Length: 99
Image 1 (cartoon, rainbow, N blue to C red):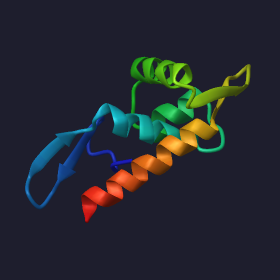
Image 2: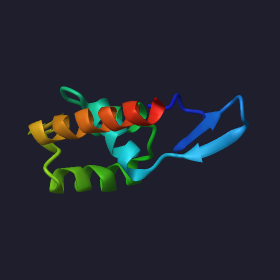
Image 3: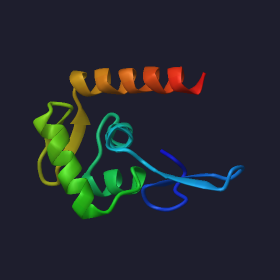
């Protein structure tokens, strides 16, 4: 997560530059928010999203097999093995870019 300067934005305070999160980063933030289980409200707050966008992104992640519903009423989402693989690769790429 980027610390929440504004929703979907990252600010480089030294340079005064504002950057938007990309879709891959948003997916990674959602997966990190879910970790071992979270309801939609927790996902919204932890990943810094609104409910409409969260609904769309969660749907995309379910279709991709990266998350699944663990329990119903209320729905609790969990990250699948494929989702953990995505997060590991995302962290690896972030590490390469920061060097």
